[in-house]
Image 1: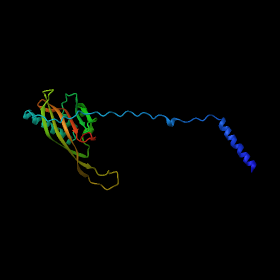
Image 2: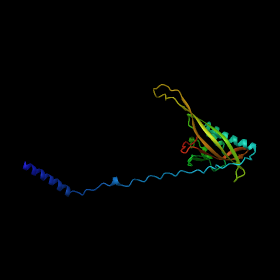
Image 3: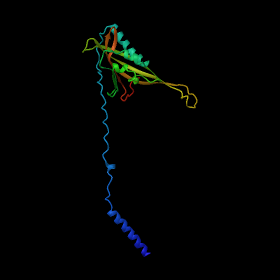
Image 4: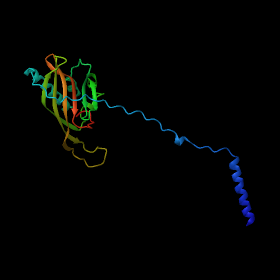
Length: 224
């Protein structure tokens, strides 16, 4: 018993001596390295505040008023028909400004595009509702006044209510399931305060700028 104990003690001392004579132990500090910096979050673009003061009684000629009301109607129908071709046709093609914009109720910008941007269907498929939705844009309460900066322009504001019918397609034929008929339901989408400047181009009133200020603070879809 004593011999065995002595052998174990010698083995233990040999192990200790080996560790002591070996290379110095180093601490792996990679786990404590500073985390990589994340790219900065882009700052949200802020829209201009909406003027809520009382507008003067309009002195716009009745013929021009009807032409401007028709321009708003054409805007609503372009979105209802989900047609970029109809949408771009209501804007002044000579304008180099950001002609069409949308803003959240919180004041941050959803999008802002030029005439050429709208005309590029590949770039702006998200300006119209998806395939299985049928939106209806109801525009009313249109007020007009002469633009104080440019007498050839008319400044306008209106309210817009958007409803949508949703159509969900049946299951794919690849799936071995019973065919499900289209499900349909309607919903309120959003309401908005529209602000615009318009000009008469060859007898037709077109939008030089049009901005939709939605009433929902976190409204995120681009157009409906």
